[in-house]
Length: 401
Image 1 (cartoon, rainbow, N blue to C red):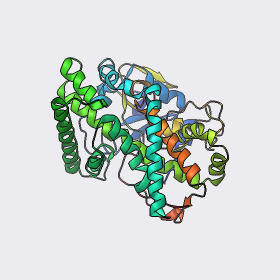
Image 2 (cartoon, rainbow, N blue to C red; image 1 turned 60 degrees about the horizontal axis):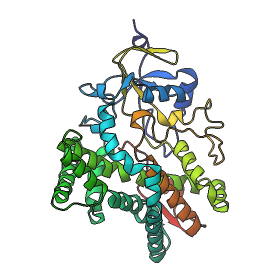
Image 3 (cartoon, one colour; image 1 turned 135 degrees about the horizontal axis):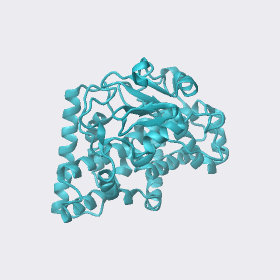
Image 4 (cartoon, rainbow, N blue to C red; image 1 turned 45 degrees about the horizontal axis):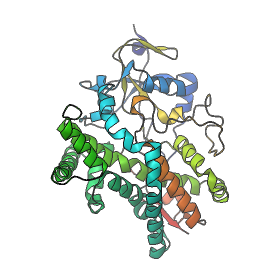
């Protein structure tokens, strides 16, 4: 009898998310049962890795596969099991697609975008000041900033933002949309992108989308037409959705930890370290997702995972592992080392990590400089949180200054 057959599976996720608080069961599991059996609302049972070293192993070791999820009843929090594109690929297929876009997101390339990002941030804050206090930071700052940046990088009209933002919800929905709505929204998003691609074939453009179309048309072996559409749609959606969510989360954490906010105001040079510490500290996902399948029997910690079994890596739990991070539940902008997994790890490490870092740095720097007296405009318990999504985030963040 295998180890998995001896262990009873827990229901997962461990209850509804409580704002940005991490369920205490993760800490118990890290210390007592670091690899545990879980049953998600949909799909087959899985292992859940909660320790830092185990999560890194599962995400980074070639013996764990995302491609093996294709055709399996993957453990998940949503009823639909749609086409995952790059997220369901392993090297070298995954590498082939990633190489096409990675050069647009290098640290050097991203730094050339910083001045323009700062201009956008300044314009948005000017608009907030003209509007007057209080204002919703989500609507007037946190959403348009990353949306504008990704639109300009890809070459997507900012005027279309309301449409593609609505359709992008299909990618992060668990229960906020019906399966029919998800299919409809994804179809709309792909059709929209296909239209932009057709425009580039009529008139070449000097943007990332134009470069991808050129790569496709000059060498069909590098990229199929379906991959071009799916990759472009994924970049548009992922290129703004997570930062739109994390920026209000970060500001919320700072406003509810006034000592840390005061520390940043007193020493703005701490902003880069603060962004990485907030990436570690804030649990973006509502649950671990995107299981890796063992391609052979492999030990994860003290547990033997059999070939064919799926393992979920709990990034938020790994980021609170006291074997790696001293006082992990404290927000500390002075950590000497911060090897967090906030952007993932391994082949599927977030390709836009440098862009997200830069945007978050510019955003926080601008807010603490222009709004040194920023505070919540409503009681904390009145803040509305998103529901039925893969990510935790605020629907609104009313602030005054």
